[in-house]
Image 1 (spheres, rainbow, N blue to C red):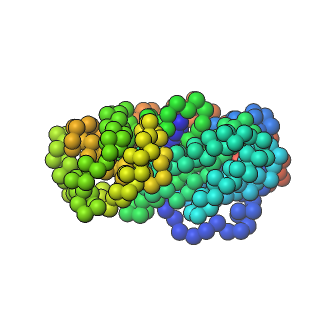
Image 2: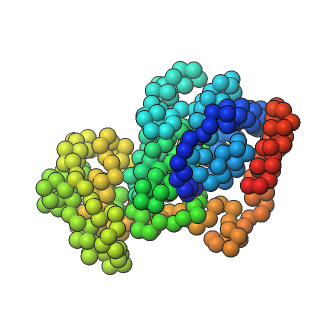
Length: 365
């Protein structure tokens, strides 16, 4: 399940070496204590909490609201946690490093003596969690960072981040493997954000159920008959689809109007494969945002299936907002998140000066 989302402004620059060194050491001690006291499952749960992770990054000394907090903290965790004999490993990273996740998971599988089937399942989970946030929830944020945490029990969590080049904001997505039921149908337990986008195509919403089913049927019924809905390999203007939808009124200048070119060979290969479910269809190589969006819009045009065009995030963090939106601050859970982190800092084995600074940063946050 996807456990949360955080929106962060894009800041230039890089983490200085002296700070990253301390972040690595401090994160190592805090994670070691959490695992020692509560087990590796608990560490995954906390990392999947967007608020706890944000406070964690603040404790380590990084800019409290910068997009770089995600990439730098995950980088420090990859070096520190992987150096521990604690039953947790960190794979993936920023940019091209994220593409190495499958190979790194194979090495982790050998280390933890996972079966080949289990390793395949972990690689599949890594790819699908990324594809869902990049292709099924089309919110304008292109993923550029993907980190996959896994423990010796085969449980995992994902922290990934996308960038909106127009707004200069980044959006962080958190996933947790516990009790996963579906990657494509309401995979999130809470979507938390301070910024809500307009006109987001959300194919994971329950409102998009018919669209998912019809998209699968369009492929399995030979996509050849879809050629008439495409212009020279490119998709028709969005306006032609929107005029068919009674309640949808989008401005003509919205960035999603540029539908791009659709690779028809991808549709033909999917037809030959005959996927049995929408999740299986989405998992196929080549099924990217444009192709998935094309099938969704054609489903609306032909069969009138209604898709969700609402951003699945809420207006504030899971602890609520000071102005009461979406609800008053849940002080009990808010304080619990802070106290959990405070206690691990107190128990950690680093010098008193660093401990005082960490607690001070947490108090300020």
